[in-house]
Image (cartoon, rainbow, N blue to C red; front, side, top):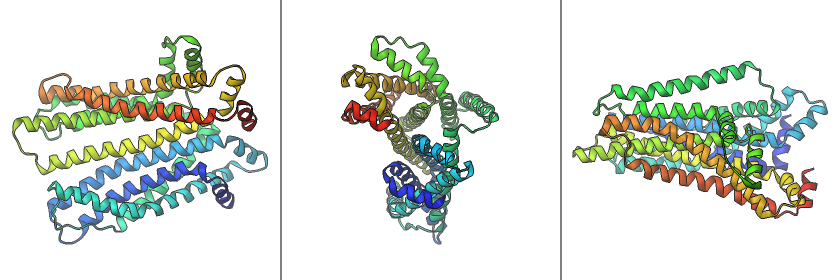
Amino acid sequence: MLVLALRSIRRRPGQFLATLLSAFLGAAIIMTFNSLHDTAGRGGVDSVSAGTLTTAASVVGGYGSLLVFFAVASTLTVNVRRRAGELELLRCSGATPAQLKRMVVGEALVVALAGVALAVGPAVLGGRALLGVFHDSGQVADTVSHVFGPIALMSGLAITLSASVGAAFLALRRVTRGAPRRDGRARRFLTYAALVAGAVSACSTFAFSATDEALMAPPAYGAILLSVGFASLAPRLLRGVLDRLPLSGAAGWLAVRNLRERAGELAGILMSLILFTAVSTVTLTVQTVESDAVEASGLVKSVDAKNLETLNFTVVGIIVVFVCVMLVNSLYAATSYRSREFGQQRLAGATPGQVLGVVWAETLVLTVTGVFFGTVAALAGVVPFTVVRTDAVLPEQAFGVWLAVVSVAAVVTLGTSLATARKVLRTPATDAVALAS
């Protein structure tokens, strides 16, 4: 099956490009930050610089590992779903489920290895640039030079390969629907546990004083946990919104019907939107409020405060890149996969403009739903922090941050969906129906 996997990659490299891009970006980020461990461990590095480098590598490395898994899982799930017919044909030809798993996992391993190999060079350059940022901000001594060593390389290999293998198993099981029923109960338990833990963490902010160094942690973690809980409930949340959505006209009716039928398939897109909106909004808003409060008090930021600020902005930047990649991959695949559907609608009398109107309405509903629940999760963290830190309820910085985050989400989702739909509609309707049959 490994030989078949290699042949599959050679025959259809375009389908694996999205997975390769996710693995490449993930490995580059992981190795870039874990090279700070190598740098901190070399001789002659003072304790303050070593602590700064180790903290940055540990925090961002943890976030990066999760994002790599979600990004690779998202792209692999789309690829495996599009190959459902091929996998079914292999099963009818005598292939066992174990052999299919070995084939899909083998493909994921080959692509992941290629991604890691391509990411080594950019990771070295990225590590040097990142260390330069710490030098310029005074967080690390100028005498400390960058080292790319075994910790960076082995962590990139281990995390990327593990994420790819795990994501391949998950993607294949999702498509074949072979997961046992107890997984549904376990998922519900974890979902409600995340919601409860998020609410408790956000509410615990009121137990801190305005000058506590750990004040930013509870609201941020609370908002993140709430967004994870909402993201896990994405299909149910989307169906609940659709049941109460007063869309009129043919385009609106058809958009609601399509979204209701494809709620499970679109859950990944909605999950990405919720997490992106919540994490970006709460992190940037809380950090901006904290920085303005420190500046207004006339105090000078400590090294720990500078470290935290750098980490917050870095984490948000990583999240923006990964979520944009996941959204573009998922939306492109979900829209291009509907070529036959679009062709049938045009043969039934719909104009290309009407088809684009339906796609626009569907994407708009998805975007608004994701932004809404992401905003709710973010406010659960922003409001308690603002009340404790400044005695206000909602900071004036919140609207600008939220507007920037929503603008990025809207441009990525609407732009990708409409551009892909226009590309699909260039194919004549009869050809689209015949090719997809």
